[in-house]
Image 1 (tube, rainbow, N blue to C red):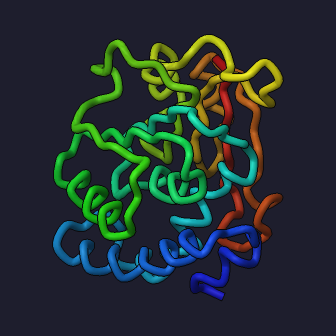
Image 2 (cartoon, helix red, strand yellow):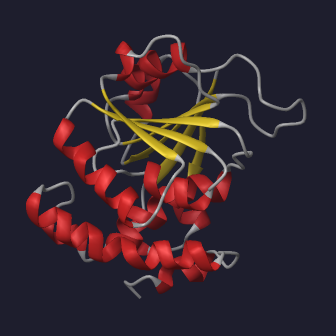
Length: 213
């Protein structure tokens, strides 16, 4: 199962609008990837598993409340930001990247599916000032030590509601043997094996790391 059905295997509560948006992603990414390569050629056919479902492992583990603000650091082609913005339509997402042409793809895809809860910024995370977020998300952008040094100053100090399950923090998607990287980061992340959430071969040795502020 390599198609959109893989999303419905793990999530069932989509509105008709969300179903329509998931459906449109593949065509838009294929079209834009021809012009500006944001997804490797061999991965584009596995878009729903390798990119969309992978991004949604965050949604399977964290509840973002309406009104929250999330920054996607080094969003690249829009992952995990775009799938999360579809999943949480009442949450605001800022997708930041230092490479302008990648954001062009993000903006075109978002406009193409009518996503109104994302904005983009051509910047490095460390250059963002005077704005605080409930969570920072990121996928395989940099070692944890660097990611945490960029994310930490951008995070709010208190959760949005007193009974929130999670404090503001960094949530990042990573793969492989992370022992050394975690040690060097000086953080003690909570680690979730994605294979536990989605038992697919592709998610072997892929993890979700959460570092609370």
